[in-house]
Image 1 (spheres, rainbow, N blue to C red):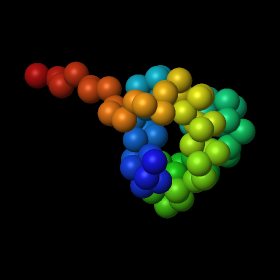
Image 2: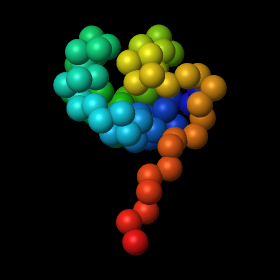
Image 3: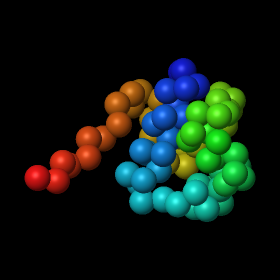
Image 4: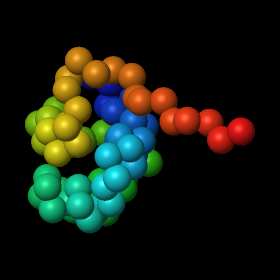
Length: 73
């Protein structure tokens, strides 16, 4: 899994699941500051951290695409 792609998708998955950074911090043990840096692409994180985040967000490794947001027309 590409670290940059993961970081870009992390925020979308988190918001889709209705979670705050604090919720994700509590579920993963990763600090909010660090999670923000991953979401912004400033840190890639490690494969072990990716697995913790995917489990917390209930996302399987096979799910490559983000859910599509409904466009507001």
